Length: 340
Image (tube, rainbow, N blue to C red; front, side):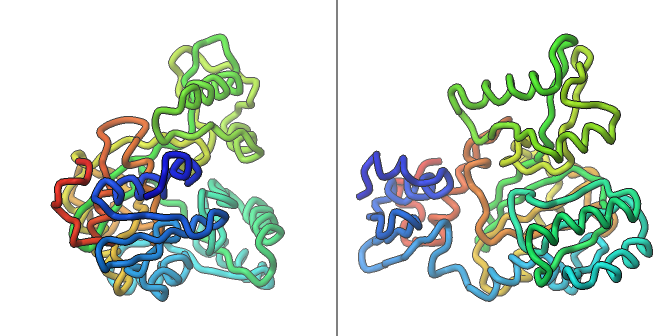
């Protein structure tokens, strides 16, 4: 069994999974510390676990889901609403700009492969902004790698964790923001919030990242880091709601309409053999029956984060590590060891 010091050395998502497995009597050991490669044994059942991947995760489905452009094609073919857009590489910038002009503004530009909201450019309102965003993306990923130009759908972002067994949990994610007190600057408020989140860290909320994207986003709204918001004024710092960049995750499992869960189930079924996923959906009103025009699926994550469900910033904790363990070691389901 892994000792406490070894557990603390794992990143949070993997640590939570290991704790759930060990609570069920699964013997988990570290094979390679530098890559966090684990071996898990329960009786004669042996699994190698890398991050949250194991033998139950089919490689082709994971690769397809990881390519945002290809995943959109599969989702669209299955009748699931996705943002209108197309993919290009660094040698097709002219074509990308013509496409952007054709579908209209505002637009989003982002790499086809990526995570944590890195290199995602939003609120692109003209060709000059699109051209600059493409240039920054290409400089980062290279000319041969592909990027997407998409329409910007207006809606609240939801992460639905879903399994083939039908287990699920839902978060609504709000982009990083501060609440004014009438005296402190935006930067001071953000630093105060970061300190509160990390001293001590009691949930999955991360420090609020202050970078060039924040400065550009604030400038679009007539503000800067040294602006002083009014008392109780809510000021967003970026559009993307990724928790790693300071977004706030609130449990919405009991608040969404059943049709939202149905969309997530359909999205998971698009990728053959995929046992579970985190489905990112933009929704105009998640409490209502969904229609083709009320939502879009942004992407499907084959290795979804679980910390933000287990320790959300707001709302009820959902032990999705249990759902993962049920899939990896189904013979331990209901043995009475797992946490509720």
